[in-house]
Image (cartoon, rainbow, N blue to C red; front, side, top):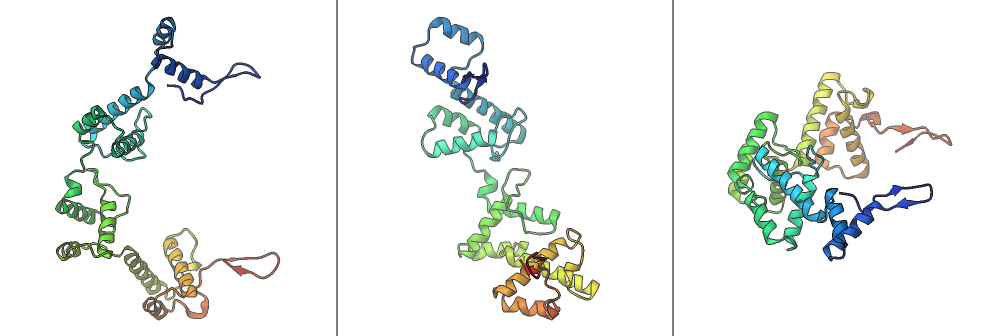
Amino acid sequence: MVPVTSQIRLSRNLVFVWGGWCAMHRSAYKCGRLLPSRTAQLKSLGFRFFQLAERWEEGFAELVTFKKKFGHCKVKCSLETETGFKLGAWCYAQRLASKKGKLTENRISRLASLGFFEKGKDVDSWGEAVACLVEYKNIHQTCLVPVQFITPSGFRLGGWCASRRQDFKDGRLTEARVALLKTVGFVFDAHAFKWEQNYGSLCAFKDKYGHCLVKQFKRFGPWHKLQNWCAVQHVAQKAGILSSDRYSRLKMLGFFDCGTTDPTPKIQNKMGPSIDY
């Protein structure tokens, strides 16, 4: 298959638009304007007269192979097969075409036979989703699942957790489900959870070194993430958006003492004194 924009330079001043030539002959063949002799010549070369249809069949064959290997049709949008075929993009195009009513009944039937449009029990069943969360916690010692995380079975656990946090925030979760998630240790507020984690690291740092001068350590070292978090707290305090509770807790550690803990780097301005950024 030749891209429509493909070109061949025949000489210094002559460029042949090869892709356009192929597209023109496909159109002529479909309209019955292509001479039998030329049709035979092109067929002998393996020329594809129905490029889109053949491309669809290639995508369907790749999907069949994927289903045999993994047992489902939940293909990531970025997935590219070993042959170089962009199966993820192809699957996205089929779902989009189906939603717009542009997919033929024959293609819908063939895709449905693979379970292409099925969401799966792992998505519909709360019990199985929570079981996946418990399994993740046992392995990673936390219920804070990255949004992009997908289980080996193909279940988008990270996205499911993010949706549940939004449901909780909007008051759409029943009391029974909230209670179930709490027993597992579900993180309802990811930002607050991360803040507490970093605060705990800062307390451990002070217990070890006797101060909160995290910035004095080498950048990109073992305290790199804590350095970044401390910088954010200083910026929030200066902007007046740090809550009084958090400010008090940090102040108790001596975090703001003497202004020497401010890890905001300084740049030497050639035209004057150093300035903060």
